[in-house]
Image (cartoon, one colour):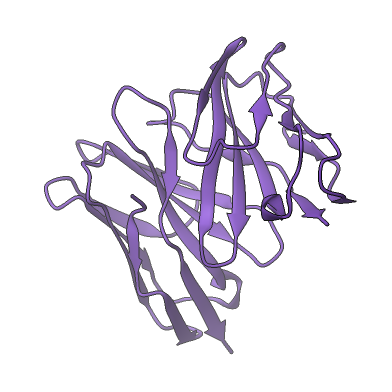
Length: 111
Length: 114
């Protein structure tokens, strides 16, 4: 079952903050976050690992609550370039490499 | 330049005409996978491969075949395409066990089956 993301869509003004949540009905072993711009491929943003280790490439932060099976992505002082659809992704079951993406969150940043 | 290359990028075909979408990566990645993206359904995994000659089904494997004869290539085969396979397809690869590695995506292949 797909992890559920909230909100489904959000509109911001430049400089505003946003939080995107990813909630799973199954245990999460790691969580990946991707951003996809319209007509393009998803691009990796961040990975969060069990035990709190976090790896990322941009000035975007995230949290991972293993007990609650949730992850949140924090976009601070949003820029126009942040517009796109955000997906969380995870390996469905430990010991397999079946991968599943969340339902997606459409984010639009206005000038 | 490190990349995942898919071909063709765009294809219109007819029901039942076998087709292959190629995927090649130049990063020596072990893990490769295929996804389809449909409006309202998001990205769904079709097949994945952990290494040469090792493949397994994802969530939506029906109507598709894959092979991994070489580490760099992971073609997606539609033996008898049907209109419900009209979709945007992405190939992706990863250097490590997926729990700790990121997915690198190809640019996508938009397939229309008439």
